[in-house]
Length: 78
Image (tube, rainbow, N blue to C red; front, side, top):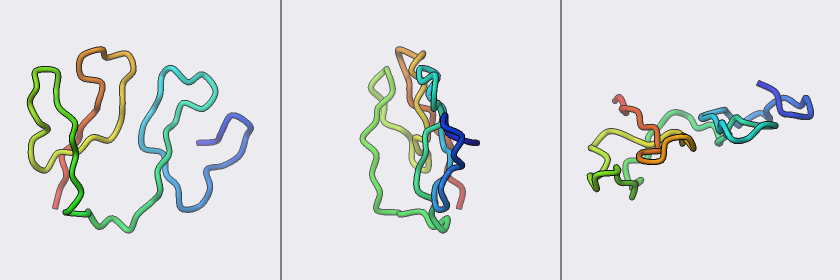
């Protein structure tokens, strides 16, 4: 993955999502970690019907084309 000006993603960063509305740099970046999950991290995102995201699931991306539940979630493995 390269940026719109041809640069490579800097060391210590990784792509984690895709923004379909961004025509020049659609990949979303986040800092790389050593893989250890922060168990104190809390998410305050709810689904369209008002439910909370279930335990051991985490948001990891955002779909601008989805007007009801735009957050993409994945299951966290131990």
